[in-house]
Image (tube, rainbow, N blue to C red; front, side):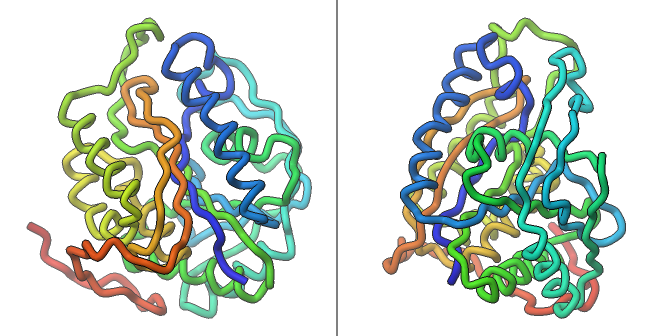
Length: 299
């Protein structure tokens, strides 16, 4: 089988722990109800999460503990309290994904031990999209040094593992859009996107995704990251495009877009379809295996 549904999902703990403190946070929290229904309707048998807040340095990591249970205090927002979690992970898929990544030339390893910390972004997605562990999940890390080519290969390895599994799989990229955060405490009621420029770029990106233009967004990721300080250089969009298929053949649905402590947070789904938007604008190449970074002059 293959990917039946994709999500761009928010990553901030306010949505889990303090949604009631801000009307926008509450709206975004509540919008997950419609996304959960779409996930159910898709028939997905597993949810695979790529989180820009699970940072890895040595290669790429896949969560392989079948039942991670622990508690998490967010790295930035300690005052919000504790996220307790009890997750159901497809450990067999994690091993399959790890091997697929290695076959494509990537350094990869699984992690499986009690108390290994699950990051906030993964927990936001897991607990709001799949709150009762209705289907097993998978989680893959975001290598902070990986650039476009390596991240695309990581996404293609995920697609290899999904096809080998024979299951219907939904995928989610947990990431901020613009990622400029307020550096001093704010009244939650006064929260807004950090700058008008960030807001304009966020809205343009979401407009493209609503049109189903995932590959165009992937190709624009570098510029967006430069202009709006996209989280982890927006590499979540590279991974999402690679695992779903590098095309514009999707229908997009925006559930919500709000500011969370200055950052742009959105929940949006992408459903594969046969027709294309016919608005493909960019043409960066796409690696099938990872053979190291190339020296490319940037603007």
